[in-house]
Length: 221
Image (cartoon, helix red, strand yellow):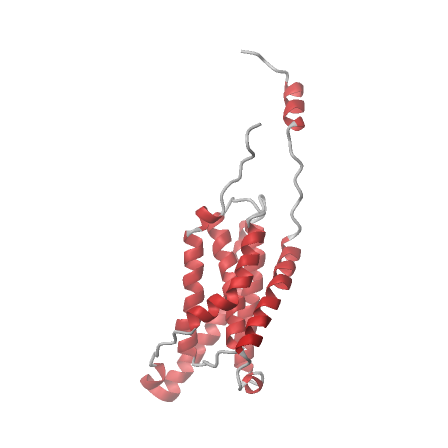
């Protein structure tokens, strides 16, 4: 067995190292992701046409809180996804979307309770809304592609968490865009069909995380 001095071994290993470009901060990457995503969302909303009662909705404080919480969830989820792909960062960053997500779901839940108190069981009748899944998929396609390209530049240290958070970011932003042209405001309908679709996509993305994010090895010389 040939023994190589430690100093010589370090020099040989360092000589073969390929320089890598350091990722920008998660905050800046989130800003870039949003900058790439919102034109797509705006274009889809423009094509579909603004809902006729949007002016009235903008005067509704509860609707604005719901939309703001969904947008905050998307932004925090995007930042958490970018944090999850950087080695050495604290795990608590993975949970940043939980607070705005709780507000988002809480507003919808409170709306369901109010409807139940005012209309009784008739107010909780669930009707099919088959436009939600294709609508969210259409609005969220651009943000999802931008997110996929950006998280693939990180490390695959938490693939399921990273992809689930990335899907939550894209889905949350898609939900905001959908509410601008899809005039369905019944809390139960929004909670089950729209928000439920978002979480279904989050679950699917999380399950596929190990296939989407894999360790990349340099080819042997």
